[in-house]
Structure formats: structure tokens, C-alpha cells
Length: 407
Image (cartoon, rainbow, N blue to C red):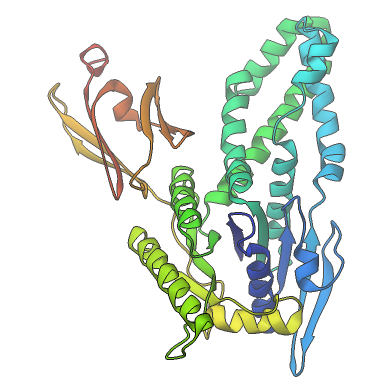
């Protein structure tokens, strides 16, 4: 079972390519669901049919070719009203019991990103249902998708700090706020928070699993390619696997034709080829491409034709990639021992990098996006002495902290 997430800068054609991928899989006999989490839903337009929040059967037919798939557009507002209302009420009760005014409690319980989180939960729920061989996801534009994919880890960290994972500790905190006579009522709050934490862990594990892969869609333009390189770094920072890149709307080469139109095409294609060469040089991931079409690729025939060009004889679910890993090096017991921590990150040339030690974690910030990396046990008793960044990522050097090493 694969989860394929299509994203890219707004307007690059990710919806169409996600729909074409799902059509190819369905035509090859796979049970496939294609679902949109993009607030500006256009998946139904690409498939030529209306869609709702629940998967519905869509038959694509073009001449002798046909495919039957299922499709849905996640309606996050309805999910928010159903799933978040109870937990919000629990949290509001906690805050009121702690002496927070009712007005402030109402404001504080509006969780940023809750709609995105629920949309992601729907996708993972579909994947875990066992009904599909593949779930193809038309995500929102890059910025929204990066926020979506980072939510499970960031919210897990928030909950862990606010309410520690150990159930007795949580209940002790809540009971202390409310008074021992209200322990049963506050247990419900602990249970709700525990379920949320468990769900966040499930989502995080699903995103970092080998069954999941992001496919970045771009058009061969310098600005779009630069954003794509930054996105690759951001996804690697979150340890989310990327399967490959798809260059959309590559203009056809005019060959030996002459005239103003041919000259324009030749110039434009030369510029696009230069951009694609830079993209390929910046990553070892496969880069597929499809040509710009005169007509908008909408409907069964256009989608199946687009899939033919995109995948040829290949299977669209092939190309699984492992998430970038961390590698511990060095060793020794003496105080002058040296250790290294290698974090694989595809850093672009102008990446803004910052490192900070926060207790037993290393805060890595790249281009304004931060991730807390839990240090291996041995490095928690060490001091950071150096850090070197190159094309392959970060190498951070450590030496034992004399105050902690012999404890």
C-alpha cells in the first residue's frame, strides 16, 4: 500500500498530475483512491465530476480505454466541528479550572492548524482501511503542505511539554488544579489528551514510513525551481521521504522549424533545459517531465494520455525513497574523545542555517523552519564543538562535557 502526496507551488499542475497518476493505477487494475486536501478543491474539475467528502466511484472512459477509481475532496470544516469540539471543551474546562478567564479560555482553545491536521488524519484513515492499494493525495500549495506535514511532530512536542505523556503525571496535574473531589471529571480530560497524542504519533509514523512518498511538481522556471530546492530541504528536515520530482509544462522543441513561433519555442526550451539541468544537479532523485499541452488536460482521455507520457511503461507506485537518516560516528571513553552526528539534508546554496542546543535536543533551523532533533544518549553528555554544512547535509562534532561525562 502506498500513499503518494503531490504538492508544489500554486498553479504548477499538481492536481492534474495526481489525477493522471490515479487514472494510470486504476487502468492497470489497482484499487486506488485519489483525494484532495487542498482547500481550493479542483480535483473534481480535473476528473470531470462532482466530489464530496466521502469516496465515490468515478469511471473514466476514453475509446477502448477505461479506468474505475474512487475520489473524494476532504471537507475540513465538517471534520473540525465533529472531531475537535469535544476536545476543545475539555481543554476549556482545564483552563477555567486553572483560573483562566472564560474569554481567554475560548481564544486559547482554537488550535492553529486543526483543520489541516484532521485532513491528514482522514488520508491516513483511508490508507489504513485496507480498501485501497494506493492513496493518491492532491495536497495544497507547498507552504500549506509543509505546515500540514510538520503538524503531527510539532503538536506532539507541544502536548508533551504541556501535559507529560505518563498518565499518572497528567492526572496528578489536573487533579491538583481541580481539587481531589473532581478527579473523575478531570480524568476525561487526560483521556482526551492521551487519545490526541496517540493519534499524532500514528500520523507522524505514517508520514515517515517507507509506504509514503512526496512527489514535488514544478514548472521549469528559476523561481519555481528555487522553491522546490528549499522544499526538498524542509522535507528532509522533517524526515519525510520524497519519491521524485515532476517537471510539468515543458515546451516542445521546434526542431529545425523556422519563424517567430519556432524562435520563441527554441529560446524558451533552452531556458527550461538550463533550469532542469540545475534541478537534476541538485538532487539524486528521479526527475520526470511532461510537455506543455495546447489544450487543458481534463477528462479521461487527456488524463490517461498524460499518464502515458509521465510514466511510460513504469509503475507509478515505484520509486519509494527512505527518509534522510542520522548517523552517529566517532567514539571513546576518555574526555578527549570525539563524536560526530551526521544529518543528511540536501542543503541549497543560500540556505540560512542555525543550530542551538536545548537540553537533550538539537534545534536545527533552516530557512526559518525549525525541528528539534533528539540527541542519542551518549551525545546528551557532550558539548557541541563544531558544525560543518555541505551538499550532503550537516556534520556536528561533539566532545564529552567534563561535568557530566563521568556521572
